Length: 293
Image 1 (tube, one colour):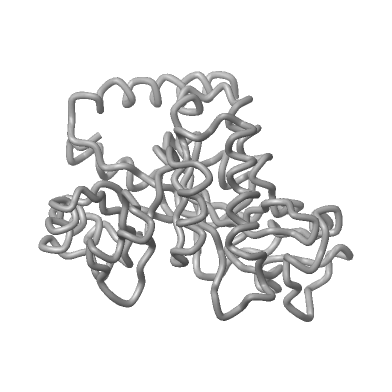
Image 2: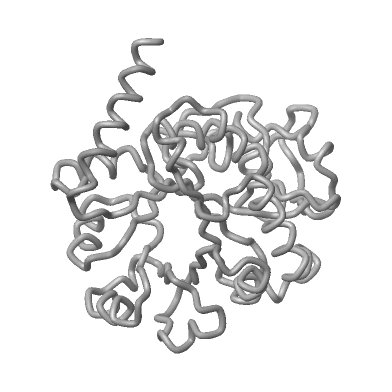
């Protein structure tokens, strides 16, 4: 095991040195590395870190007692988690309706996501806190840990006000944790909801912002609400001409979520700045083969 870890550290250090003189396409590990580990778990984040990702991508929700936790869903998902009694859940439980202590009783690592045939269940994995993620990276001996960044999404929808705190409360809770761990320069905050991005900007102007989009293009002028430095479109909207427009406007383009090598190639040709993927290790190998890493 020790030899394997030494090899991983050497590999990360080598490619960190090699990529300095080559074009850089950032690799964002989606929900850690959802393709091979249970999403948004510490196991997924550790695996992503060992894979030398540039950025760990994850999602944020808030518990009843105001703790930032990492979950894509605004509820404990019965398709991914077991109850405290290790039995299947019969209903969706809103995360904002329970305290962290209760949330930690749920097992979100035992159920394999059927969408990912190579995903390995890790029984006993819990929904982690943002603090736990930061602490894991800070304590890690992995070479990439000192440079890895974090792409954190605020999961909030205006039409579901009871499922999340207000944008102001959400943003403050996030910024407080980021500052506590001195991660201001290593964090991107992304959201489909421009309100939380605007609040983040007010609280800490140094944090990089990313505007997520799904079913349409977003015009550079529309980013004036938040002055987001990044636009993150659904990959099917990532055309070369759109990337060029955004680059001309001074914005980076980081599409989500691409798992197919053929689409990786299209994104590369469109000159994107980064790619969000469920298979970060595979994408890194692909970029290495292209001489882009």
